[in-house]
Image (cartoon, rainbow, N blue to C red; front, side, top):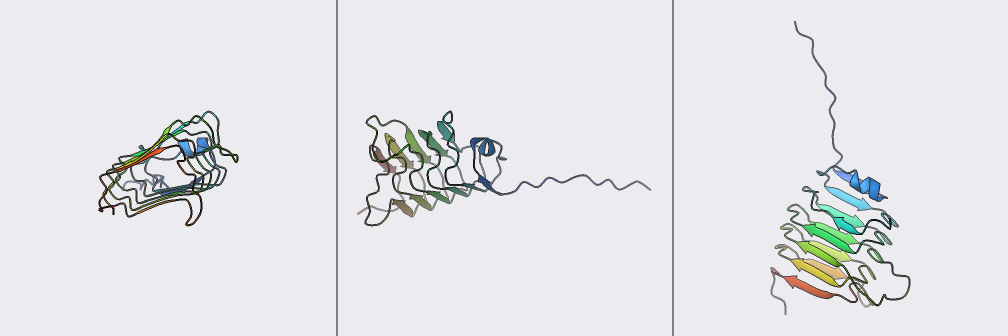
Length: 168
């Protein structure tokens, strides 16, 4: 009779909370939820956030004052992405004033299941462009707070293309 071999099983956690760029870079590409804590991922050398490798990503949430030095964000071709929530003053070095020279861009494209995009006050404040394109099920886009100055994408041209609903 043969011996029964028991091999270790590695189960990838579908949910991850990160605090640093090192933790973000160490995530398995099959993660389904990424939550970035307040004041997370503020490494000066990290300037481009590209999430396209996370093929199973459903939820991306960022707390306040995170990704301060990132000036380019790519969320492109994420077929399972449903929800993106960005806290206040993230993707920004906002310290109470606006920079004179906006640069960088935010690209949210080809995410067929995306339903919700929420961006907090003064996030992406110095970005030069915001492109939201070909997200067939996008229902909610909120930038800032109701009856409050948003300042999000303050200097940017905003483009929303291939919107599933007629804008009036």
